[in-house]
Amino acid sequence: MIDDAIDTTITLGWALLAWITALAAIGTLLLLATTAAIAWLWQHLRHTTWTTSTRHTPHPARPDYDEAA
Image (cartoon, rainbow, N blue to C red; front, side, top):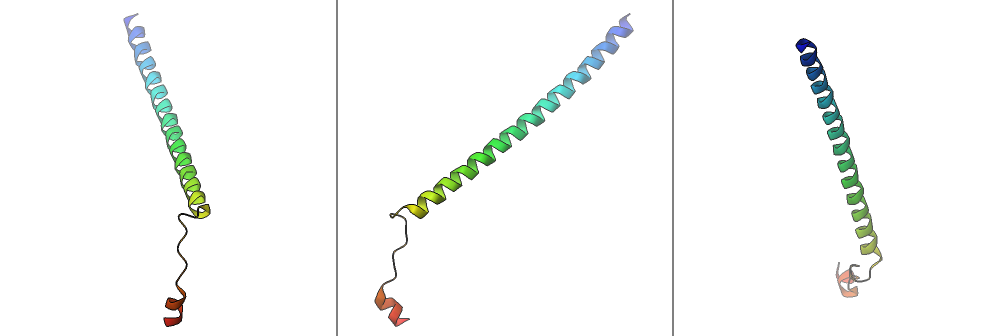
């Protein structure tokens, strides 16, 4: 009877460890995917904003500099 209780405890312990490992792996993948999506979105929005903004466009070259070159 005690032998069965110990065996059940060990089996439940391994099952709990498997669940914790699986949930940790799923949580890690979810966190990494969310971080990658946010980083991609941030870079995409930043690139779109910079290319359409007149404040961040480079200044045109001066005509006298082009002629001297």
